[in-house]
Image 1 (cartoon, rainbow, N blue to C red):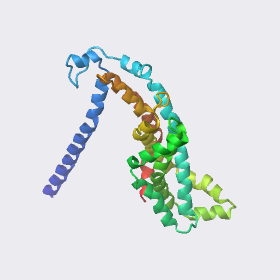
Image 2 (cartoon, one colour):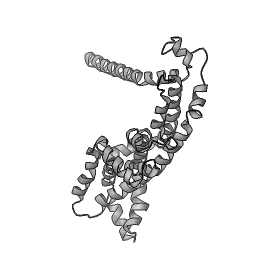
Image 3 (cartoon, rainbow, N blue to C red):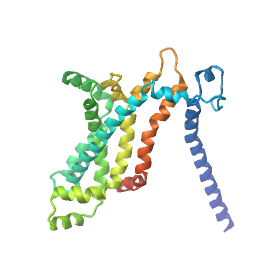
Image 4 (tube, helix red, strand yellow):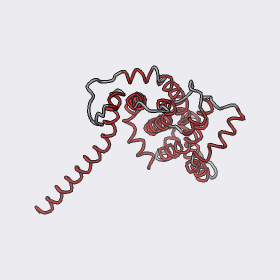
Length: 279
Protein backbone atom coordinates (compact mmCIF):
# COMPACT_ATOMS: atom_id res chain seq x y z
CA UNK A 1 0.00 0.00 0.00
CA UNK A 2 2.80 2.41 0.95
CA UNK A 3 4.76 1.35 -2.13
CA UNK A 4 1.81 2.20 -4.37
CA UNK A 5 1.45 5.58 -2.67
CA UNK A 6 5.18 6.24 -3.11
CA UNK A 7 4.99 5.46 -6.85
CA UNK A 8 2.02 7.80 -7.18
CA UNK A 9 3.94 10.64 -5.48
CA UNK A 10 7.00 9.96 -7.65
CA UNK A 11 4.93 10.07 -10.86
CA UNK A 12 3.20 13.26 -9.75
CA UNK A 13 6.55 14.90 -8.88
CA UNK A 14 8.07 13.84 -12.21
CA UNK A 15 5.07 15.24 -14.06
CA UNK A 16 5.41 18.62 -12.33
CA UNK A 17 9.16 18.72 -12.97
CA UNK A 18 8.58 18.11 -16.68
CA UNK A 19 5.87 20.79 -16.79
CA UNK A 20 8.13 23.30 -15.01
CA UNK A 21 10.98 22.59 -17.47
CA UNK A 22 8.61 23.04 -20.43
CA UNK A 23 7.25 26.28 -18.92
CA UNK A 24 10.81 27.64 -18.52
CA UNK A 25 11.65 26.71 -22.12
CA UNK A 26 8.50 28.56 -23.26
CA UNK A 27 9.05 31.65 -21.07
CA UNK A 28 12.79 32.19 -21.69
CA UNK A 29 12.40 33.42 -25.33
CA UNK A 30 9.72 35.90 -24.20
CA UNK A 31 11.96 37.22 -21.42
CA UNK A 32 14.89 37.64 -23.83
CA UNK A 33 12.59 39.43 -26.30
CA UNK A 34 11.40 41.89 -23.64
CA UNK A 35 14.91 42.51 -22.27
CA UNK A 36 16.31 43.06 -25.77
CA UNK A 37 13.49 45.48 -26.62
CA UNK A 38 14.46 47.84 -23.78
CA UNK A 39 18.16 47.98 -24.68
CA UNK A 40 19.78 50.78 -26.65
CA UNK A 41 22.26 50.09 -29.45
CA UNK A 42 25.12 51.10 -27.13
CA UNK A 43 24.14 48.32 -24.70
CA UNK A 44 24.92 45.68 -27.32
CA UNK A 45 28.28 47.30 -28.10
CA UNK A 46 29.20 47.48 -24.40
CA UNK A 47 28.73 43.73 -24.09
CA UNK A 48 25.70 43.78 -21.77
CA UNK A 49 24.53 40.22 -21.09
CA UNK A 50 21.41 38.78 -22.71
CA UNK A 51 19.55 38.53 -19.39
CA UNK A 52 20.92 41.74 -17.87
CA UNK A 53 18.65 44.76 -17.43
CA UNK A 54 20.21 47.96 -18.81
CA UNK A 55 20.76 50.92 -16.47
CA UNK A 56 18.79 53.19 -18.82
CA UNK A 57 15.61 51.69 -20.27
CA UNK A 58 15.38 52.58 -23.99
CA UNK A 59 11.65 53.36 -24.18
CA UNK A 60 12.40 55.25 -27.39
CA UNK A 61 12.67 51.89 -29.19
CA UNK A 62 8.89 51.54 -29.01
CA UNK A 63 8.08 55.06 -30.22
CA UNK A 64 10.68 54.78 -33.00
CA UNK A 65 9.22 51.46 -34.14
CA UNK A 66 5.74 52.99 -34.36
CA UNK A 67 6.68 56.32 -35.97
CA UNK A 68 10.00 56.01 -37.80
CA UNK A 69 9.55 52.33 -38.59
CA UNK A 70 5.96 52.88 -39.87
CA UNK A 71 4.78 49.98 -37.72
CA UNK A 72 1.43 51.66 -37.11
CA UNK A 73 0.83 51.73 -40.87
CA UNK A 74 1.82 48.06 -41.25
CA UNK A 75 -0.49 47.07 -38.39
CA UNK A 76 -3.34 49.03 -39.95
CA UNK A 77 -2.81 47.23 -43.29
CA UNK A 78 -2.69 43.83 -41.59
CA UNK A 79 -5.79 44.64 -39.55
CA UNK A 80 -7.77 45.62 -42.67
CA UNK A 81 -6.87 42.33 -44.37
CA UNK A 82 -7.60 40.23 -41.25
CA UNK A 83 -10.97 41.88 -40.55
CA UNK A 84 -12.03 41.31 -44.16
CA UNK A 85 -10.58 37.85 -44.74
CA UNK A 86 -11.25 36.08 -41.43
CA UNK A 87 -15.03 36.75 -41.08
CA UNK A 88 -15.69 36.10 -44.78
CA UNK A 89 -13.61 32.91 -44.72
CA UNK A 90 -15.56 31.67 -41.69
CA UNK A 91 -18.87 32.56 -43.37
CA UNK A 92 -18.03 30.73 -46.63
CA UNK A 93 -16.70 27.66 -44.80
CA UNK A 94 -19.78 27.63 -42.54
CA UNK A 95 -22.09 27.57 -45.55
CA UNK A 96 -20.04 24.78 -47.15
CA UNK A 97 -20.05 22.75 -43.92
CA UNK A 98 -23.81 23.28 -43.53
CA UNK A 99 -24.43 22.02 -47.05
CA UNK A 100 -22.17 18.99 -46.54
CA UNK A 101 -23.60 17.98 -43.17
CA UNK A 102 -27.21 19.20 -42.99
CA UNK A 103 -28.43 19.04 -46.60
CA UNK A 104 -28.90 15.89 -48.62
CA UNK A 105 -26.18 16.44 -51.19
CA UNK A 106 -25.13 13.72 -53.60
CA UNK A 107 -21.57 12.53 -52.99
CA UNK A 108 -21.23 14.77 -49.92
CA UNK A 109 -18.27 12.75 -48.64
CA UNK A 110 -16.53 13.03 -52.01
CA UNK A 111 -17.03 16.80 -52.07
CA UNK A 112 -15.72 17.04 -48.51
CA UNK A 113 -12.56 15.11 -49.40
CA UNK A 114 -12.12 17.24 -52.54
CA UNK A 115 -12.32 20.45 -50.49
CA UNK A 116 -9.79 19.09 -47.99
CA UNK A 117 -7.27 18.47 -50.78
CA UNK A 118 -6.47 22.18 -50.55
CA UNK A 119 -4.71 21.47 -47.24
CA UNK A 120 -2.27 19.19 -49.09
CA UNK A 121 -1.17 21.89 -51.53
CA UNK A 122 2.06 23.54 -50.32
CA UNK A 123 1.91 27.30 -50.57
CA UNK A 124 5.40 27.45 -52.09
CA UNK A 125 4.48 25.62 -55.32
CA UNK A 126 1.74 28.15 -56.03
CA UNK A 127 3.94 31.23 -55.77
CA UNK A 128 5.09 31.31 -59.42
CA UNK A 129 1.59 30.74 -60.95
CA UNK A 130 0.09 33.30 -58.57
CA UNK A 131 2.78 35.84 -59.45
CA UNK A 132 2.25 35.36 -63.21
CA UNK A 133 -1.56 35.53 -63.03
CA UNK A 134 -1.53 38.52 -60.66
CA UNK A 135 0.82 40.45 -62.93
CA UNK A 136 -1.55 39.90 -65.86
CA UNK A 137 -4.60 40.89 -63.80
CA UNK A 138 -2.85 43.88 -62.16
CA UNK A 139 -3.48 42.46 -58.68
CA UNK A 140 0.08 42.97 -57.42
CA UNK A 141 0.16 45.57 -54.62
CA UNK A 142 -3.57 45.35 -53.90
CA UNK A 143 -5.43 44.34 -50.75
CA UNK A 144 -7.80 42.24 -52.84
CA UNK A 145 -4.96 40.20 -54.33
CA UNK A 146 -3.68 39.21 -50.92
CA UNK A 147 -7.16 38.76 -49.50
CA UNK A 148 -8.18 36.40 -52.33
CA UNK A 149 -5.27 33.93 -51.93
CA UNK A 150 -5.58 33.97 -48.14
CA UNK A 151 -9.19 32.79 -48.39
CA UNK A 152 -8.22 30.16 -50.96
CA UNK A 153 -5.49 28.67 -48.79
CA UNK A 154 -7.43 28.94 -45.51
CA UNK A 155 -10.89 27.70 -46.40
CA UNK A 156 -10.02 23.96 -46.37
CA UNK A 157 -8.99 23.98 -42.71
CA UNK A 158 -12.03 26.09 -41.81
CA UNK A 159 -14.37 23.63 -43.52
CA UNK A 160 -12.72 20.75 -41.64
CA UNK A 161 -13.37 22.42 -38.26
CA UNK A 162 -16.93 23.56 -39.07
CA UNK A 163 -17.80 20.20 -40.64
CA UNK A 164 -16.75 18.34 -37.48
CA UNK A 165 -18.68 20.71 -35.22
CA UNK A 166 -21.89 20.80 -37.28
CA UNK A 167 -21.90 17.03 -37.63
CA UNK A 168 -22.25 16.77 -33.85
CA UNK A 169 -25.40 18.94 -33.74
CA UNK A 170 -28.61 16.94 -33.35
CA UNK A 171 -30.55 16.78 -36.63
CA UNK A 172 -33.81 17.04 -34.68
CA UNK A 173 -33.12 20.78 -34.42
CA UNK A 174 -33.30 21.11 -38.22
CA UNK A 175 -36.49 19.07 -38.39
CA UNK A 176 -38.14 21.20 -35.71
CA UNK A 177 -37.13 24.37 -37.56
CA UNK A 178 -38.55 23.10 -40.87
CA UNK A 179 -41.81 22.11 -39.16
CA UNK A 180 -42.08 25.66 -37.77
CA UNK A 181 -41.75 27.01 -41.33
CA UNK A 182 -38.09 28.03 -41.33
CA UNK A 183 -36.28 27.97 -44.66
CA UNK A 184 -32.85 26.38 -45.08
CA UNK A 185 -31.23 29.82 -44.95
CA UNK A 186 -33.10 30.72 -41.74
CA UNK A 187 -32.13 27.38 -40.19
CA UNK A 188 -28.50 28.04 -41.05
CA UNK A 189 -28.30 31.71 -40.04
CA UNK A 190 -30.60 31.78 -37.00
CA UNK A 191 -30.17 28.31 -35.48
CA UNK A 192 -27.09 26.37 -36.61
CA UNK A 193 -24.66 29.30 -36.85
CA UNK A 194 -25.36 30.58 -33.29
CA UNK A 195 -24.84 27.03 -31.95
CA UNK A 196 -21.46 27.01 -33.70
CA UNK A 197 -20.14 30.01 -31.72
CA UNK A 198 -17.35 27.97 -30.05
CA UNK A 199 -16.10 26.69 -33.43
CA UNK A 200 -16.37 30.17 -34.95
CA UNK A 201 -14.39 31.66 -32.06
CA UNK A 202 -11.74 28.95 -32.45
CA UNK A 203 -11.42 29.67 -36.16
CA UNK A 204 -11.33 33.41 -35.57
CA UNK A 205 -8.35 33.01 -33.21
CA UNK A 206 -6.38 30.54 -35.34
CA UNK A 207 -7.09 32.21 -38.67
CA UNK A 208 -6.47 35.73 -37.36
CA UNK A 209 -3.13 34.55 -35.98
CA UNK A 210 -2.06 32.79 -39.19
CA UNK A 211 -3.18 35.70 -41.40
CA UNK A 212 -1.53 38.32 -39.17
CA UNK A 213 1.78 36.43 -39.18
CA UNK A 214 1.81 35.27 -42.82
CA UNK A 215 4.99 36.37 -44.57
CA UNK A 216 5.61 34.39 -47.76
CA UNK A 217 2.58 35.36 -49.87
CA UNK A 218 2.59 38.93 -48.53
CA UNK A 219 6.24 39.39 -49.52
CA UNK A 220 5.53 38.20 -53.09
CA UNK A 221 2.26 40.05 -53.71
CA UNK A 222 2.98 43.27 -51.80
CA UNK A 223 6.15 45.31 -52.39
CA UNK A 224 4.65 48.79 -51.98
CA UNK A 225 5.83 50.09 -48.60
CA UNK A 226 2.45 51.75 -47.99
CA UNK A 227 0.62 48.40 -48.28
CA UNK A 228 3.02 46.06 -46.47
CA UNK A 229 1.74 43.88 -43.64
CA UNK A 230 3.45 43.50 -40.25
CA UNK A 231 5.76 40.51 -41.01
CA UNK A 232 6.97 42.08 -44.27
CA UNK A 233 7.20 45.52 -42.68
CA UNK A 234 9.30 44.24 -39.78
CA UNK A 235 11.89 43.01 -42.27
CA UNK A 236 12.53 46.66 -43.19
CA UNK A 237 13.86 47.07 -39.64
CA UNK A 238 16.79 44.83 -40.61
CA UNK A 239 19.56 47.05 -41.98
CA UNK A 240 21.98 46.16 -44.76
CA UNK A 241 25.05 46.90 -42.64
CA UNK A 242 23.66 46.07 -39.22
CA UNK A 243 20.49 45.68 -37.19
CA UNK A 244 19.32 47.49 -34.08
CA UNK A 245 17.87 44.49 -32.24
CA UNK A 246 16.30 46.60 -29.51
CA UNK A 247 14.37 48.53 -32.14
CA UNK A 248 13.37 45.28 -33.93
CA UNK A 249 12.27 43.46 -30.76
CA UNK A 250 10.23 46.48 -29.66
CA UNK A 251 8.40 46.29 -33.00
CA UNK A 252 7.77 42.57 -32.53
CA UNK A 253 6.31 43.14 -29.04
CA UNK A 254 3.98 45.88 -30.29
CA UNK A 255 2.80 43.71 -33.21
CA UNK A 256 1.77 40.94 -30.79
CA UNK A 257 -0.80 43.14 -29.01
CA UNK A 258 -3.71 42.72 -31.52
CA UNK A 259 -3.27 38.93 -31.57
CA UNK A 260 -3.28 38.78 -27.77
CA UNK A 261 -6.42 40.94 -27.68
CA UNK A 262 -8.23 38.61 -30.09
CA UNK A 263 -7.19 35.56 -28.06
CA UNK A 264 -8.32 37.07 -24.74
CA UNK A 265 -11.72 38.00 -26.23
CA UNK A 266 -12.45 34.54 -27.69
CA UNK A 267 -10.34 32.20 -25.53
CA UNK A 268 -13.26 30.94 -23.39
CA UNK A 269 -14.75 29.33 -26.52
CA UNK A 270 -11.42 27.97 -27.84
CA UNK A 271 -11.22 24.58 -26.07
CA UNK A 272 -14.93 23.88 -26.55
CA UNK A 273 -14.68 24.67 -30.25
CA UNK A 274 -11.69 22.39 -30.83
CA UNK A 275 -13.33 19.57 -28.86
CA UNK A 276 -16.49 19.84 -30.95
CA UNK A 277 -14.50 19.89 -34.17
CA UNK A 278 -12.58 16.72 -33.22
CA UNK A 279 -15.87 14.91 -32.59
